[in-house]
Each structure stands twice: as structure tokens, then as C-alpha cells.
Image (cartoon, rainbow over all chains, first blue to last red; front, side, top):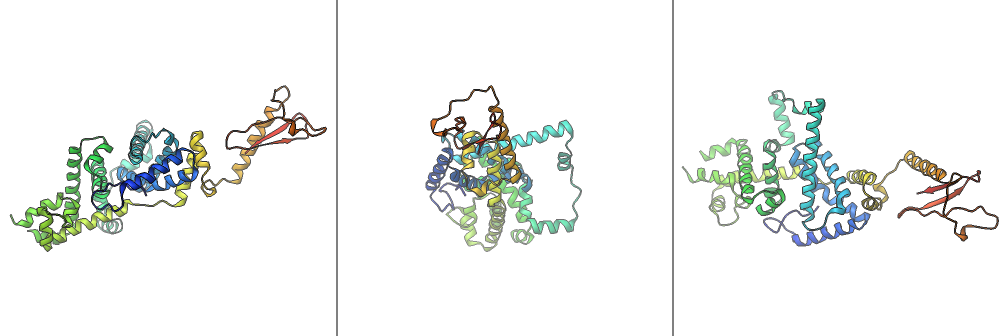
Length: 208
Length: 161
């Protein structure tokens, strides 16, 4: 997998080395080397899938979006000019594809009342407590909490706390100010961590 | 307000390394000294790691193959060439599709050679004594071409593959 992190924090491998390998692979793939292209797609896959999952919050949607993005990656590879990092460029492709997909879905819903969309937007019935307990056990409550965060907070939290990018790098990638990145990150942390600690009343009691 | 209550706010917003008790910040120092807050911080870190694991997925070979095949069908010539250079397993092609391609190529070739159509003159190496004059055909980059005679002297099949 591409190393999407900087030297900051827990990153163990030298980021510059990864960038070198990444850049070489891209050059080769652009020159028509099929093996390099396959390797590039294999390496980009987990990264794109992760971003797609963060953006959509839904594993099935994320799978579809990942396929779309990687096909676009191959189609548009010739247009990549190496001015920005490859992962930054790829992130932009992913975001645009995600937005396009969302717009298409919305258009379809408005025009035809797409039943698939209706199904997705229909309010869910109140959950059975037993089901919730089982599902929570299987899927992990924290994932549910994560999905409840606004998309921008999910993105920032993933890029910052999980992938270890700096505020400046996140700001550059998302096209927002670093101060906004910090604000989103704090909000996401507070919401997520508070919900995590709520699940453990014994820890809360210790504080009071 | 007890020191631990104050720290709770910091645990909710602190950097991950502070929650691990690394560094000299008030939160990191407190986490190192207070077992109760250390438990809470550890819980937060553990759950965050689980979330990270959920978001991390390595692709199967079939998923990569599917991407390459989809792109190969619709890509521009340069990137399509790169995709088609991938190892054979990446581009499974069903027998029926192969026959469809052959039939289409044969049909195109036959149309090109209908009487009245002008073709480039053949190279001398293609002509033996008494042989029919076969056309010179140049395939696109990355393709090969076979020229096949038929029983009908006016029809020659060009097979691009």
C-alpha cells in the first residue's frame, strides 16, 4: 500500500523512499508498462477503498466507488503531470467520483423516484434492542459512531488521527484552511471519544 | 473539580500520542501517573485502532483484475495498451467473446476487399509463382494481422488479433 503518512508520529518507514517508489511506478505505468499499471492499481486499491468507505460510510457503496475510481485512474493516468503527489491527485479523483456518484443518485431520485434511493433514504424503523446488541457486537459500535459523524469530520479524523497526516497536508488535500482542519478534528475527536467512553460507564464513574 | 475531571476534557481532544502518555504535556504526564485516566485513554486508543482496522482492506487479485478489465474495455489507446500488457490472468476473455471479435474482424476484412476497392500494392515477398496478389496490410501498434485467402478469388479475409 502507498504510505500516505508523513514522518510525523508513528510512521516507521521513510516517506521519501515511498514517494520515490510511487513516482517510479506511475512513470512506468504512464509509459505503458502493464505490470507497473497492475502494481499501481493493487497499491492504490486499499487507499481508495478506505477513502471511499470514509466518504460513503457504507461498505457496499465503497466497493462500487472504489472500482469506479480505479477505472478513472487508469483512464486519466496520462493526464497526471507529477506536479502534486500522486496520492493527492488520486484523492481528488476519488472525491470528484464520489460527488458525481452522489449527484447522479440524486438526479435519478428526483427524476424517477428511484426505488433504490427511496429505500436508502427511508427512515429506519426503531431498532430492536436485542438486534442492536447483536449487531453492535458483530460490527463494532465505534464504526456506527464514526458513520454518524458529518462526512467532513470523518475525512479529517481519518486523515489526521488514523493516517497521521499533518493539519497542513490535510488542508491542502481538502482545499480548506488548516485552522478549519483543527476545528473539524477536535469536533470529531470529542464526539467519537465521548461516545466510546459512554459505552464504559465504569470509566465514567471513576471520574465522578 | 478534581484533576481527573479536568483531564477528561483533555482526553476527549488530546493528540493520540498524549493519550499514550508520550511527551511532556499536562495530559501525557497525568496519564502516566493516574491509572484511572490511563484506562480511559487506553480504551479510546483501542477503539480507534479497531476503527482503523475496519477501514483497512487489502484487495483480492480478482478485484484488481476486474478493474483492469473494465478499464481495458473503455480506456484511451495508451492506457488500454498498458492494461492489456498486464499478466494474462488479469484479462480473462470468454470463448464466445473471442469468436465475436474474430467474426467482426473477418467481416471488416471482407468488406474492405470487395471488388472496386483500391488497396496498396503487395510486397514482392508475398508473391510466389502463379500466386494471387495478396494485399499489404499494416496492423495498428500492438496488433498482428493475418491475410487469409478464400475460395472466392475476389474475397480475402484480414484477421486482426
